[in-house]
Length: 151
Image (tube, rainbow, N blue to C red; front, top):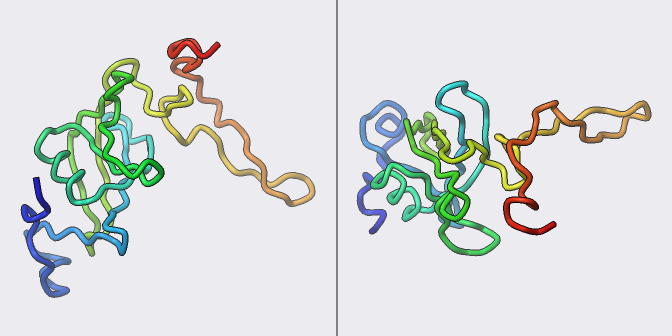
């Protein structure tokens, strides 16, 4: 598979209002991808795709990403069963960011820590003005230590 399935970058008007999909990858060859639940709109995760991961996602209808830490492709849910079925792919006006609307298979969790969303904590300011993390109140969908036999 190759990034040649994407249209060449055109002029500003073509990029912003045309019909050609012309994703702009950063200097590392990546594009940011915000992933949301197709049914309730909640933000599930943020990932990165290179041209190959994006092409795989469009071809298979299942979300593929590029792992910056492992320097390899990963299909979300390939080992956990929490595969992300893509309902819709959106791009922003200058085509340098994506939103994937997905439905998650398996137990519905996206976060490897066991929550539906990777965004299960919010930043709050303490009495002294220093930032700290507080839980959002969302319950874990599963305990990864039990599921993967770590306890």
